[in-house]
Length: 30
Image (cartoon, rainbow, N blue to C red):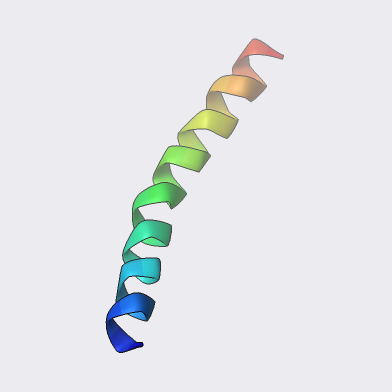
């Protein structure tokens, strides 16, 4: 279970900057 939790945290940490950059590009287009 601890490995699954660590994997989820890693996925969230990696996806956060990607989501932020996507939101920035969308706001620039709009």
